[in-house]
Image (cartoon, rainbow, N blue to C red; front, side, top):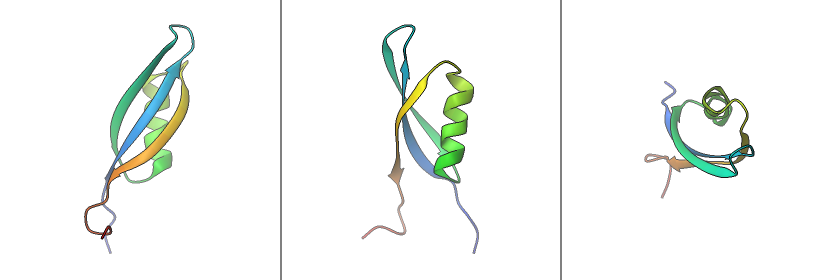
Length: 59
């Protein structure tokens, strides 16, 4: 069984600018998506993360 990347939506609050950013990351796990967001928004606070699509497992 091979693992496939999934598309996660991450919401990040930038407290310095008082702006919320929404980004999509292709990642194997939710933790990997969080790490990618933290790398892009060093001072940001992750407020939500959710799976955007999971084609074969949803019915």
